[in-house]
Image (cartoon, rainbow, N blue to C red; front, top):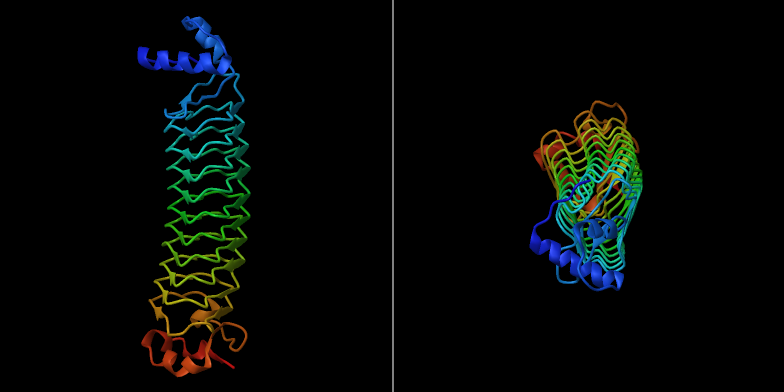
Length: 319
């Protein structure tokens, strides 16, 4: 692979190589090419990390890399492993279309940029215990990514894990917000645990057709179409809910129990929120099946709200 660099960057790369390789003197172009043949990333504490790759390269490994520059290794299809223990930021599109990356270890990374690993179709696992923010579409289209654990992540932006069809479970105990379409069409996703999440973006879990278990005990806002056509979602508990937006649970055809017994006031309800669900009224079952459970102290208040009154045959007072 031919790499063209200007004289200033060439001089800086040569200086970095001298320190890394413990040598001195000048590098000719051919010596430079030979020296970097097996080096995926050349770190410099105060400088952008410069991506350098060849056809034979299979890993991006550096013990000292402080961050990865935007588009640094975009499209390098032979890299299979990313191991950057000192990296704190991966900037936009840094590894986009690195189709053969299988594992990513970023134990010190706090920020993942827009599209950083977008369409890394071979990516199976990620290790990011320090990550606090994940950018838009960061892992969009990583079709073999199966498990995500983000123990300190506070925000997951729009489309981050969209079309990650092999994704089975997500654990993000510190995340307070998940964005628009963040898990759209994750057809293998079965379990989500977001105990600190206070709001979902619109269409956050749309077409998650295998989603059966959702834990969002702190969520106050369920945005429009948040769980649209989640065909296996049979029950959900929303103890902190204040708003259920338009078509939030539309087409959840086995949704039989909505638990609102923890709420302190009647949540606002928009049109079509439970259309084409047992809760929405087309099922003939009541009681434990096809019902909305509410606090006994608020039962009458629910029936005074026109939108909830339409579901009056489904509202059950918890005792």
